[in-house]
Image 1 (cartoon, each protein chain N blue to C red):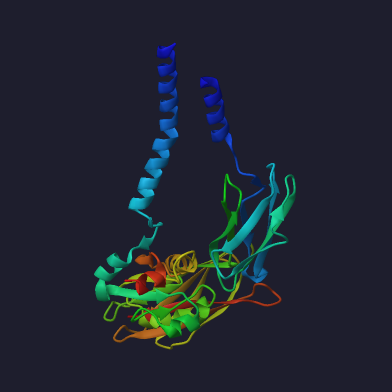
Image 2 (cartoon, rainbow over the protein chains, first blue to last red):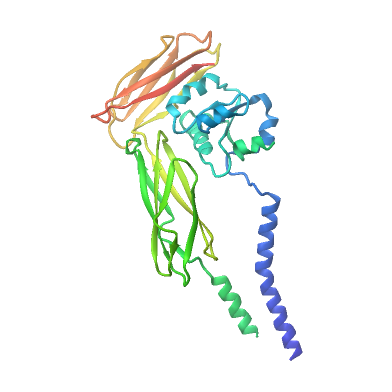
Length: 139
Length: 213
């Protein structure tokens, strides 16, 4: 009877270990890389290493842009694409890497603008700043 | 004891979300003239306890999501009315609506609204450029009608030092916009305005950008 109890306990322990190990692995991975990069995203540290070879593109609303922006940034948004694209092209340098940023967090306008630059203008060196303006302010 | 524990484990694993969504991913094809897409994400509380939706957020200011009420009894259905306004956006658009509830099995649900905003005339590429000192050879931009006949009536360059002309490949379907600078000695910019005959009641114009950098 004791042997049977030990055997059943062993099986139960093994069964409990499966979800525990899975959950633990997921949590450990989440903690080690809390902000996984989406396709086309770049971290602030990497973009800063590119230095002056970056053309920053700010997709936030005009009022927020006026209150502060990354030095040298030009404003461009999906909503005002036709209106703002000439001013972007005035400062655009084919030799520079374009890094697009929005407010940060749940913000997909930066990705939309980056996609539009790639698709419509066929520019290929275009990235989205992970964390956006919030990441820049926290640097 | 063993059987009881195994049954408990099975029940825990099989626990599923109370809110069941009919169509959490919706896709649309639209023209820019349509201006917006409005749709409904329907759900039902299939559980045995009320569920309260605590928060709804969208990934873009261009998208709104509305809910009639917050708490849904077991068996009760509801829907979130979502509206995505294009406001100049073209091409593939993906808008995420995040729903947070007190459903213990699935507190967070992501609704996915995908809209392809097709322009009647596809332009590839929308930018041609030369570097200062380049040979200054002519460059071609493909103008392709998508879904319906679009005729090109004329093209006008904002800068006489960058000239543009249209060659017909297939009338109403495909054209080539040929762009050439007189020289590339200095930086120049031009906006090339392509006038079409579509839609007939309010024909659209498109802009192609040319730069010497």
